[in-house]
Length: 408
Image (cartoon, rainbow, N blue to C red; front, top):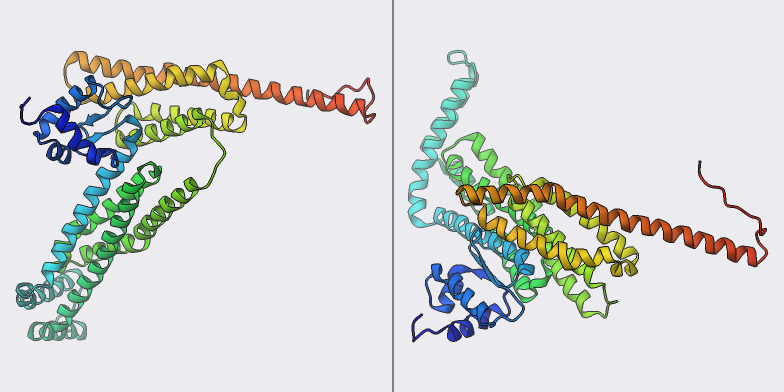
C-alpha cells in the first residue's frame, strides 16, 4: 500500500460518493480510490477488516463489475448496470443517426438512394413473374428511371425516417436520465419491475441497431424490422419507463407521509424475495433458477400470512426464518455466485451441492414453516368461532346445547 495513498484516504474519497450512491461501477470506484480496478476488492477487504464500514458489508460483484455497499442494494446495482448500458447504447444509436444528417452524409445520399432504387427494382424482377415488357414491368422500369435521374423522393423518405428515429431516441435518453436522477436521489425506491423493463427496452434498441445497416441498403424486410423495433420503443417501452419514473416519485411521497410501522420480518422478506427474483432473472439458464422461483413463491406466501396476522412474527418458526434461514441463504448464494465461473472439480462439486440444497432441503424447510403458519391460522379461526358461539349463547341467541355442524 502506497504511503501517499493510505487506506484511510481511499475510504474518505470513496465515501464522498458511496454514502449517497450505494452501488457504482468498479472503474468509478477505482478512480475515486486512486487504485487500479483490479485492486478495488483488495482495498475494500482491508477497510472491512478495520471496521470502517461498521455493520455494512460492501463487496465487488465480478459478474456486473459493480461495487455494492451492502447485499440489500444488489437490486439497485443490477438496475444501475443495465440502465448505464442502455443509456450508452441509446447515445451510440443517436450518434449514428446524427451522422446521417452531416454534410458528408448528404453528399453520399444520392448515390446510396440510386443503389437502393436499383436493388429494389431487381428484387421485384426476381420475386414477381413479369411477362416480357408487359405494362407492369414498363411502369416499374419508368419508376426506376425516374429514381435514377432524380432520387430526391427516396432521399426525403430516408431523412424523414432518420428524424423520426432521432426524436424517439432523444425521448428515450431524456426518460432514462429522469429515471436515474430520481433513483440516485432515492436508491431505496428500486422496484421489481425496473430491471425487466430496462432489459426489454435494451432488446428492442439492439434489434433496431442491428437492422439499421440492412435497412439503409434498401432491404424491405430489414426496413420493416427497423420500423417495427422503433415502434416498440415509442409505443411500449417509453410509456413503461415513464410509469417507472412516476412510481419512484409516488414512493417518495408515500415515505414522507406517516405510516403504520411494519413488522421488520415483512421488510426482510420483501427484500429477500426481490433479491431472489433478480438473481433468477440473471441466472436464467442456471440449474438453480427453478429452485429460486419455488423458494420465492413460498416466501411470498409466508409473507402474506404474516401480513394478515402480524402476531405470527413472534412464532419460533418465523424467528428461525429470520435468524437462520434467510442469512444462511444469502451467504450460500454469495458463495455460489463466486464459485459458478470456476472450473476446478472441488468448485463444481460445491456448486452441485449448493444446487441440491436449494432444490430440496430449503424448499422443504420453508414448506414446514408455511404449514405451521396455516395450521396456526386454522386454530385461530376455530377459537374465534367457538368464542362467537359462547357469546351468542350468553346473549340468549342460541341454546346452551347448540352444537355447530361440521363438514362431513
